[in-house]
Length: 385
Image (tube, rainbow, N blue to C red; front, side, top):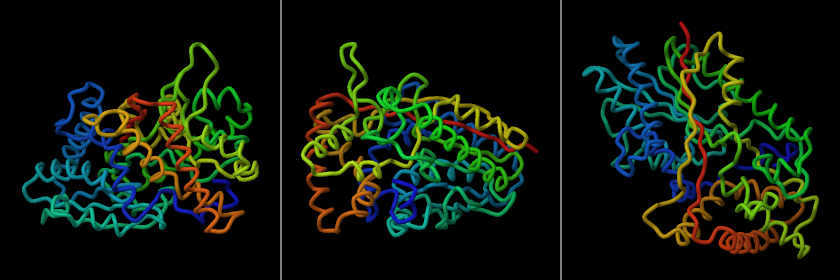
């Protein structure tokens, strides 16, 4: 949301809602799993192999280590990242019969840590292993998280698209600078402002992690991203392609436009309703990496397009029961905050009910029975000696 109100709202919805519906991004996390039970798709295997290779290199470089320290950065409520951390810890434990593993989960102070602890304490959690010890910390990943030279492996899944601040307003009903529609309707100054902020934030993030990693320690990042020529994301990307016509708005922007036409929201409220993230492509990741090349080696980058939701469920049902609720699990606090600046909580509750109904109808109209895809960018960094 607008920078004036930053720090007063949660980024994502708590009380277990993200654990319930955010797991419909699990295809992205599963693409990082070492065991590919759900798919042998090449792109998913490639990401899993990148993480496996990362853990293997660190294990070999620190063969005599008694305790491995792992950082899970931007953990949210844990339902997604706990799966991936299970693979990481199991691999590290297998490297030595005597070693132990300490995992630090971190997220911002407004995160729902109660749900995280529930995920960690479940019977299937990796933390049930007596040689693994899990801790949590409430701090932004744009600040130091660990002591210098203390971490062997740092992982960050589906978090780095969130920026440290909103660099400038985005006019109209464009919620972000992502996609061809936004590109065609926003000024060059606005787009460059957001691009520069995204680079600054990624450079800061990488500099902080380089300080915390041990020499030859590695950072594995999977972020919501985009391809160089298109933004596949049903929430902030483009709407369905027309027959050679101009780029279309995404479903949420269309829903907001419908409410504006009914005089249910004001232009002032729309100006505050900006999502605080930026979807990078591989070139932008490489550009940021070049700024820290003295301390970090960029081992690889790759782009992966994966379906949202359970592929065993019919697309129309999947969209209404999984993808749309996932949108609200991620975005509802930011949307509410924009409206709360000018309305009472009771009025906002009524408006949100109308907006959710309008969004669901619009999403169905635009996407119907089509499978929704999202793009993720993977990057692996190694700290130089």
